[in-house]
Length: 385
Image (cartoon, one colour):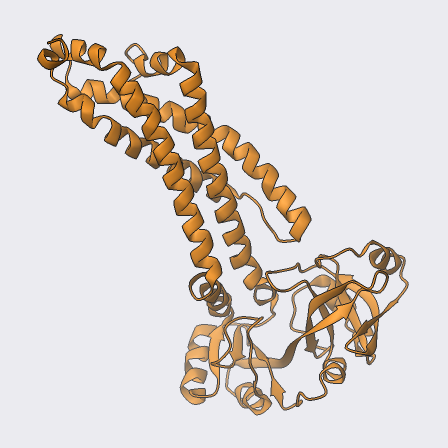
């Protein structure tokens, strides 16, 4: 392609209006795919935000649990039983629940995840949590996720000065003594972390004997997978046993395959692909029709169909490459805007850029193959008859 006259490029340049329409269609298709994949990626990532930060090699959960937002309880006695297994170094219980809280300074109501844990062994791998675990021993004291969705400038300003903030949650007054960084999710505006005592004060109907998660750490040199398999054989029925990696994947699989989010945004990506393919096909098909006599002349001169299809492939490569650039720029800008508006971790990692470029290249090539059918069937005798 590079050793001959760039006929495809010259043909695209000849009709600038059609060229820019094609580029606009591809850029719009890329933007759709970036947005759909970006939101889907944010949904999957946020479904396992807390899962990824658990200081646990093995996790005990209820068989009815789907993810953090759709959890159930297990008997605390099962945690004690697991702690007695050979190879287990320690275990800690974690309670999870949801309550609406009122923002301290503007009365804004938000849905918050309440995490109750043992301050001496909180089981959360965040430096901010570890540094404040002594303060969490005080009843009705919590720390606040500074990446929560909502407007909290005054709250954060006061906390950053080292001053505590009082807040009302379910008709109970809590004292916020610090912050940590986790992030919001779909259906979850933020997180508060406190002690088991604080949690049970907020949820008086919950029994201390029923926990949400049992977090286990194995002794150095022990195989978590082997110990998890052994625990599974002993606890089959009312408790599921997973390694932390399995627990993370469990949440993402549920979000991607068993909720409307995966289907909706997956379908949106397909629709973006189809939109781009139709736009490119229309341009290439019109281009072939306008230059059919020229292609027939090439055939009469002895050029093969492979050579002529190479011209279409050249046009497809040019359209895919140039059209991708404005789509990428617009997608990056909208992802940042969405992050500001929703506090979701929307971003464009390099892997997603590569994926969308490959999809763009495929849709352009597929359109080119369809558009070149008429070219391959062109008979010079019929064209010039």
